[in-house]
Length: 309
Image 1 (tube, rainbow, N blue to C red):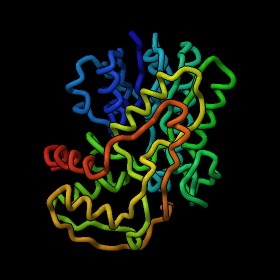
Image 2: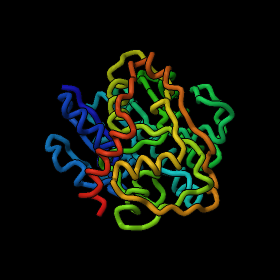
Image 3: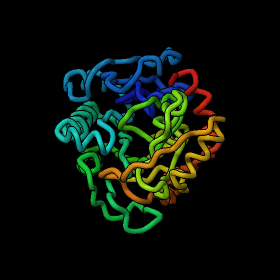
Image 4: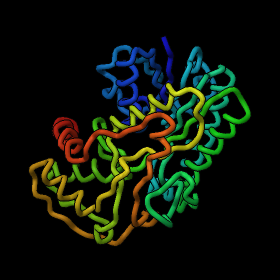
């Protein structure tokens, strides 16, 4: 039986990966300090062992890595705004935390690490769609720390007997994604809408985003882990983009609630447009997203009514 360690395993994306791995027969250990993760995300997954610890805890990380074949590294301080307010914490968790994971993986002879990165590494975009070779000029400490995380992973893959795949997520949404003021626009809008509050759009709402369902992201992680001989950085997205104003309309349809919308000035660190080219991941490990945004939003609002109110 293949043994996997998921850092940030009680979080939004990590818990969805844990569920998929259990369905595939993996032995799963989830390491999470529960700062943004939730025990209830793993309640139904009785075959997942939760280790409550921080990725910066070297001794615990080393013990959790014992006998592990593949590591899914998701533990992170996430978000541009959070990093602007707390740049030291951002780097401490994302850069030094990743180095501790890599060192433990090397010493325990782990076969592969699949690291969760972010489109924030690109900064303001120069052309669309974004390929992996787009210039990386991050505008925030978060983008800088995720780029450093990638570079460390790929350097380890060159230096040691460890394959490393870095998955650059665009706007991920879906089940187990709870409200976080620093987080993704979809759970923020859902939280506000279900509590009878108006939605705030930063800028004119014509900025575009590439939204990808967490079930597609979980499958990308699994396929990247299972494909031998692959290291490198890959975009994980839907490959399509919509405006935030269009998103508001889709959310109205999915929720059955007519939202009130307020417009505020753009935020620092936000890019104007975003859409990924996902052909490299399709070629390397057969990544093919399948969840349509309208269907994914309907599923999310069914979940949110029980979990966000």
